[in-house]
Image (cartoon, rainbow over all chains, first blue to last red; front, side, top):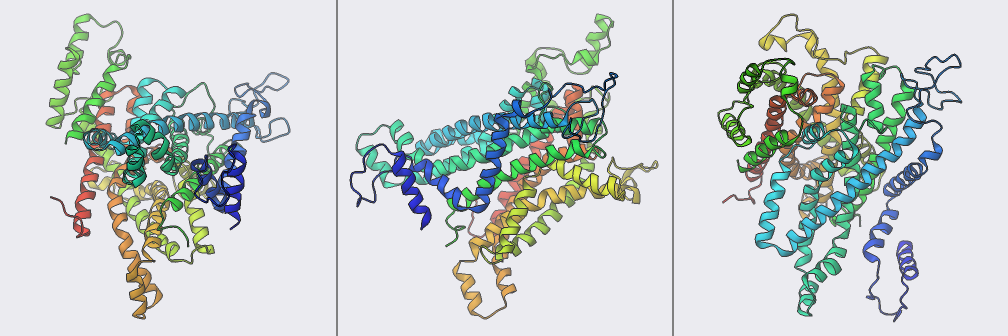
Length: 316
Length: 309
């Protein structure tokens, strides 16, 4: 198979250790826990398309300040000093202007950055919390597991968006608070999923061997169990990025977004609340399409993981 | 029960810990100190935090949520019609979405692996699933309300003075119902479709499918066997999903200005009308707990292998 040669190619190049024995097919591959999921993604065409979209969007997010042609909140004026409201797309304003004379293209470009900040930070926070919860709960079991899973049960009965609305409404609409709320909301499902993966992993013989050989719990968890459940963690982090972006967009659309940044949800909210949702297509369509593309791409990547982690769905 | 208790406790303290003072909006400026105290007393805002908490929990036990700051009316009177409005779009939306989604999921799941139907079905379903509900709403508004001009996309229509059941049983209400309902249905199809498809794909390699095939029945009937067995996880998933959808419908209600409980929650939060916000959130949390309970019980009924001790 072509992909397996790719795997060995990558792993041989990334390993600085000399390969002891070419015949030894069980030789440990240092970054296998990370590279295996990645090569698996490259094999799935939908996931590959998703990766490309996410990659391009990330590039735009990084270079956003250089791509944007105007400051996002600068009101465009005519030479006579009148506000250029709701202009159609032109060479000066690639995507026209808003009802306040702001350049839509620049706001749209800055939105890439906001989406990736929210998605990235939110997913990292969710990933760390749910992985720790899942690892500790699943590995130690017993009383600790009971307590942690009760906490998860309570957290699971909190309705997501209403909680976000109330929390952000009370704490104040800022990007930090939105990310905090995302972290508080989405660790719970991840903890469940990772825990069940750890539960099956814990029963494997190698864990007992490692313990018998004198390895500490800490060592077993992070050196042996974590790399083996990494696919599940990866899946959950990918989905969390999507959830985070979706939650921020929804909150912003409702009107609880950070007023100091221009996210896509915020753009749609401004168009909606100023009554231009139905007429100013140049203002509404770009953020909508970008949101759909980004979230769908992340779901496509997540789906590829799901298909691979569930052997019954795998194609033979 | 314990879960409900904990959630309402968290809720109470969340509202009290924040620094903003609800009396600012409640009490007019320049009011005398005695009058202010009397007002606070009426709204249950006097005494220590602990006393307030006990009074609030006591009220919850007998179903008393207090009075709304904004409407100056009991919270129940404010929320009850809103809940009914939400159920009008949530329940039919969920059922139709599940029905259509499950049917399509069976088709996609039974299609040839790697074929056009399967790949196309998965791709379209994933894209719709990745579409935020407000964008579905905006798209429907743009097409049916602005472009074609067929359907209204704002509010519930004029009641014409009708009250009670008649409020809902008139033509004007129904044409206002169509677009929000459609948004909920579309929002709901992909998840059902993908879940059903996974179930069918998992089942189609089982031995009993081979057996049915060996009996020589038609392909459709074989598919039906696999489909029926995939319904089980779907049905148990539906109950918790119902609660989550009612919560997720918030955004759709806002797009269509549908006066439901979700929109009321957002309004209450922005108005700092804590009693209403607390009660709306509490009711949504209770709904999720009950739905999970119902899911567990149905699962036991449907799958004889599951036994509750």
